[in-house]
Image (tube, rainbow, N blue to C red):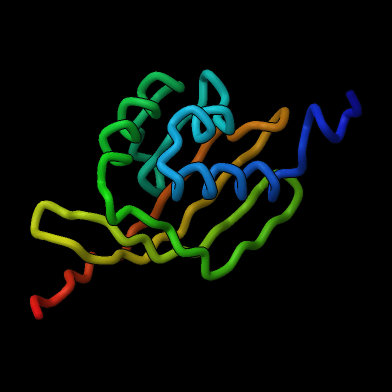
Length: 127
Protein backbone atom coordinates (compact mmCIF):
# COMPACT_ATOMS: atom_id res chain seq x y z
CA UNK A 1 0.00 0.00 0.00
CA UNK A 2 1.06 3.55 -0.54
CA UNK A 3 1.80 5.90 2.31
CA UNK A 4 -1.24 7.99 1.27
CA UNK A 5 -3.49 4.94 1.73
CA UNK A 6 -1.88 4.16 5.10
CA UNK A 7 -2.07 7.78 6.28
CA UNK A 8 -4.86 9.72 4.58
CA UNK A 9 -4.79 13.48 4.94
CA UNK A 10 -6.45 15.05 7.95
CA UNK A 11 -9.44 16.39 5.98
CA UNK A 12 -10.19 12.90 4.63
CA UNK A 13 -10.06 11.33 8.11
CA UNK A 14 -12.41 13.95 9.56
CA UNK A 15 -14.79 13.64 6.59
CA UNK A 16 -14.94 9.85 7.12
CA UNK A 17 -15.65 10.41 10.79
CA UNK A 18 -18.56 12.78 10.06
CA UNK A 19 -19.99 10.45 7.39
CA UNK A 20 -19.91 7.54 9.86
CA UNK A 21 -21.47 9.77 12.57
CA UNK A 22 -24.35 10.69 10.25
CA UNK A 23 -24.82 7.04 9.24
CA UNK A 24 -24.71 6.13 12.96
CA UNK A 25 -22.19 3.43 12.00
CA UNK A 26 -20.22 2.88 15.21
CA UNK A 27 -17.59 0.61 13.64
CA UNK A 28 -16.81 3.00 10.77
CA UNK A 29 -16.85 5.91 13.24
CA UNK A 30 -14.42 4.22 15.61
CA UNK A 31 -12.10 3.27 12.73
CA UNK A 32 -11.23 6.99 12.48
CA UNK A 33 -10.09 7.29 16.13
CA UNK A 34 -6.78 6.27 17.74
CA UNK A 35 -7.05 3.68 20.51
CA UNK A 36 -5.74 6.27 22.98
CA UNK A 37 -7.63 9.27 21.56
CA UNK A 38 -8.90 12.00 23.85
CA UNK A 39 -12.26 13.76 23.47
CA UNK A 40 -12.71 17.16 25.15
CA UNK A 41 -15.32 19.79 25.79
CA UNK A 42 -13.42 22.90 24.74
CA UNK A 43 -11.07 24.01 26.09
CA UNK A 44 -9.88 21.25 28.43
CA UNK A 45 -12.67 19.23 30.06
CA UNK A 46 -11.86 15.59 29.27
CA UNK A 47 -15.09 13.79 28.34
CA UNK A 48 -13.65 10.51 27.06
CA UNK A 49 -10.19 9.02 27.33
CA UNK A 50 -9.49 6.25 24.86
CA UNK A 51 -11.48 4.48 22.17
CA UNK A 52 -13.59 2.45 24.61
CA UNK A 53 -14.94 5.60 26.29
CA UNK A 54 -15.50 7.36 22.94
CA UNK A 55 -17.37 4.28 21.69
CA UNK A 56 -19.55 4.13 24.82
CA UNK A 57 -20.57 7.81 24.40
CA UNK A 58 -21.50 7.31 20.77
CA UNK A 59 -23.30 3.97 21.05
CA UNK A 60 -25.86 5.87 23.14
CA UNK A 61 -25.86 8.95 20.89
CA UNK A 62 -26.28 6.86 17.73
CA UNK A 63 -29.63 5.57 19.03
CA UNK A 64 -31.12 9.02 18.31
CA UNK A 65 -33.08 8.74 15.05
CA UNK A 66 -32.82 12.52 14.44
CA UNK A 67 -29.03 12.66 14.85
CA UNK A 68 -27.33 14.50 11.99
CA UNK A 69 -24.34 16.82 11.75
CA UNK A 70 -24.65 19.30 8.89
CA UNK A 71 -21.26 20.60 7.87
CA UNK A 72 -21.19 24.37 7.30
CA UNK A 73 -17.47 24.70 6.75
CA UNK A 74 -14.17 22.89 7.14
CA UNK A 75 -10.76 24.51 7.51
CA UNK A 76 -7.41 22.83 7.99
CA UNK A 77 -3.75 23.53 8.50
CA UNK A 78 -1.45 20.51 8.48
CA UNK A 79 -2.84 17.88 10.81
CA UNK A 80 -5.43 20.19 12.44
CA UNK A 81 -8.98 20.36 11.10
CA UNK A 82 -11.77 22.67 12.27
CA UNK A 83 -15.39 21.92 11.37
CA UNK A 84 -18.34 24.25 11.83
CA UNK A 85 -21.56 22.24 12.06
CA UNK A 86 -25.18 22.39 13.06
CA UNK A 87 -26.13 19.18 14.83
CA UNK A 88 -29.74 18.03 15.02
CA UNK A 89 -30.43 15.67 17.89
CA UNK A 90 -32.78 14.68 20.69
CA UNK A 91 -32.03 16.65 23.85
CA UNK A 92 -33.63 15.75 27.22
CA UNK A 93 -36.05 18.66 26.58
CA UNK A 94 -36.89 17.55 23.03
CA UNK A 95 -35.68 17.65 19.42
CA UNK A 96 -33.52 20.58 18.41
CA UNK A 97 -30.29 21.87 16.96
CA UNK A 98 -27.00 23.10 18.32
CA UNK A 99 -24.11 24.97 16.71
CA UNK A 100 -20.82 23.11 17.09
CA UNK A 101 -17.20 23.95 16.45
CA UNK A 102 -15.10 20.77 16.34
CA UNK A 103 -11.32 20.83 16.35
CA UNK A 104 -9.49 17.63 15.40
CA UNK A 105 -5.82 16.71 15.68
CA UNK A 106 -4.99 13.87 13.29
CA UNK A 107 -1.89 11.69 13.61
CA UNK A 108 -1.01 8.56 11.68
CA UNK A 109 -4.27 8.64 9.73
CA UNK A 110 -6.56 8.72 12.78
CA UNK A 111 -7.98 11.30 15.17
CA UNK A 112 -5.71 11.63 18.20
CA UNK A 113 -7.50 14.44 20.05
CA UNK A 114 -10.68 16.41 19.53
CA UNK A 115 -12.25 19.45 21.18
CA UNK A 116 -15.92 20.42 20.87
CA UNK A 117 -17.45 23.82 21.60
CA UNK A 118 -21.24 23.75 21.64
CA UNK A 119 -23.63 26.65 21.41
CA UNK A 120 -26.96 26.86 23.20
CA UNK A 121 -29.43 24.22 21.96
CA UNK A 122 -32.42 25.59 20.08
CA UNK A 123 -35.45 23.37 20.53
CA UNK A 124 -37.94 22.79 17.75
CA UNK A 125 -41.30 24.39 18.45
CA UNK A 126 -44.40 22.21 18.56
CA UNK A 127 -46.59 22.48 15.48
